[in-house]
Length: 342
Image (cartoon, rainbow, N blue to C red; front, side, top):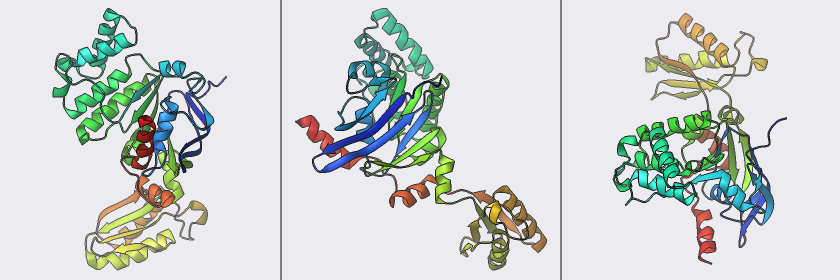
């Protein structure tokens, strides 16, 4: 039998006054999978994570994490989930080892088991050399890895990551991505929100796009890009004098109008579907690229770059939501802050 999803939600609704932060969200994440929750500012991402991690009660709908209902049995749900918030939560006045040991003791592991678990995680996250260093002296990447290690002390089945690489430089981001790959290889289930579209492209098996509290699209990165448009042929010529001729060649091969940029000496056109290929036999994707390369060679045109490009996830956001993804859910956090204050 197929095991139930690690995360499942049906009809989640959350209201803050007249605003519906969640408006009937359905979600399921298979065990061992990575799901990226993406959407523009105020879309409902943060509220969804808060509901799934038992920090906020839904007004309607149901949600389960590793089989535990987050409303009816929140304590059991908390025992099987880990949450890495956007801001690091480790104590800067404790060493890395002391931070993880303290968390282990809070999970009732006992002093010696907690110390052993801390040593194990520091090694896993390549922080052993800094184990006796105060956390406030860690670099941004080291501190983020320590924060993630802290969420794993109790070995949760499901891990929620809110903007896991925000503020990290490209090298530190790649290092953390490698750590997340290891966690998934070990069987962990991840749900992450992110402002970096390439992060979702790099890590996620499944991407869920939300806007105005609703799920508006879902699929892997390639299928979402296909909703915007298929592959595109792209040519950059050596001489600006050849641009117009190349445009005619590209349009003949593609069977579609091209976009010409004389300044960049580039020509772009859709690589059409095989089913609508023109009589010269050009198909989509690699077949169209091969036909174009042959046509350019026969014409004797000098080319600097020739390739097949795809729409980006930025294009997906702009097409589906009318605006790009933002780095924070400011509209959501305001009512959440009011709720905490009450």
